[in-house]
Each structure stands twice: as C-alpha cells, then as structure tokens.
Length: 230
Ligand SMILES: O=C([O-])CC(=O)C(=O)O
Ligand SMILES: [Mg+2]
Image (cartoon, rainbow, N blue to C red; front, side):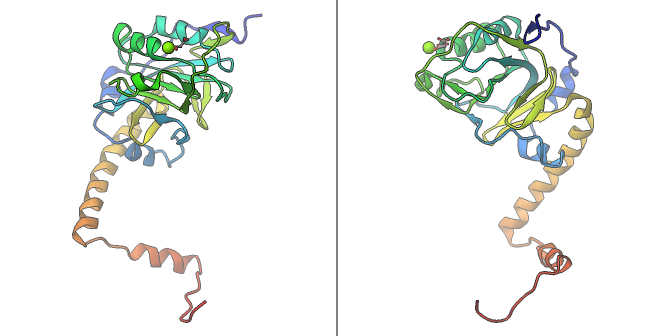
C-alpha cells in the first residue's frame, strides 16, 4: 500500500504572470480580500533576511514528524518560482532542515522560498540568507531521513489547507495562501485594497481620518454609553 508514501510528479500551476502580479502587494492587503482567513498561524515566522517579498507556487510536502526524506525529494523536483511548504504533524522537537539544505535550495535549485510547520537549525547562518525561509522555531536536534511522507498532495499548515500549485505570498508579517482558482479575483480586489489602505495611512498621519463608523457600529450593537465612573 503506497498511500502516505507517494510522490506526485505533476501539479496544476497558475500562469507566471498571475503569480508575478502579487509581488508588489503586502500579504496583509491580499489576505483582507479573502475575508481574513487565509493567513498561516503567526507561529510560522520569517527566519532569514530577504530583500523582497516571497511569491511563488506551492510544492507541498506532508512528512512524518521530524523526518526530512520527502523534503530532500521535493528539493530534487523544485526550481525557480517554487516554494516548498511542509506539513510535519505539528512536531516541534526536531529541525527539518539546516544550512546545507537551505543553501542547496537557494543556490542550486533556486527556489522562491521554504515554509515549515516545524523547526529548522543552523540559525546563525540561515538568519543571514536572502532566501525567504519561514519556520516555527529552531533547535540543534536534527531530522531523521526515513519517511514516510508525500509530495504534491493537499496539506494542512498553520490552520490553512494548501493544495499543490496554490500561490503563496510571504513578507515580514508572515505567509498567506491564495487558492489558485480564486487568484484572478483576489488580485483585482487586492490592488484596490492596497490603494485604499495607503489613503487610510495618509489620513491617519495627517489627522483627517473619518472614524464615525466606530460609533455607528456600537449603536447598531446596542452598546450602552454610561456617563459616570465604574
Ligand atoms: O542534517 C540535516 O538533515 C539538516 C541540516 O542540518 C542541514 O541541512 O544543514
Ligand atoms: Mg546542518
């Protein structure tokens, strides 16, 4: 029986132009266009020092806790524009990769990023790397290399489902998932939200923000305003 121990060699991919178009938009603005429920848990944080946002397509890995055999396999399949994203049964006790694998991903495979639901190691070196690398922590304890696991299957990570070929965007705030079937619509809305957000920032700086909505909402929710001390 091979279920749980499979490598799917193919993925449905969105067009390169569509993926690239998300490059200039902050992850927060994009996530606002998906009703704010497609961001990975903030436990999964940026560990390196990229000069630009991470944007690419998901090459998914579902691995047994603390085991990186299938991550090595995913690296052999990955190339430019791919982000290897790894579900790890919630394990926090073992690093899934270190400097050697991170340099291989960056320099040999030229991937767009790495995202782990788990720890990494060799943090002194990884923290200086320009490749976007997200993880939930670091530890000197290393991974096993035995499997099982799967590549290019649906995974759950940070409270969100990721399908192979979904678009991932990451910046200093964290990582969000854009389901590929919805990407065109989300992109169009994200451009508008981005512009409106910039206007709101300017209004906040220059004292012209309109906050009437706060009172309107509280009144609608029948909040009681009491003109005396507690
Ligand atoms: O040994 C491992 O599997 C992970 C590691 O430290 C490295 O990639 O540098
Ligand atoms: Mg190492």
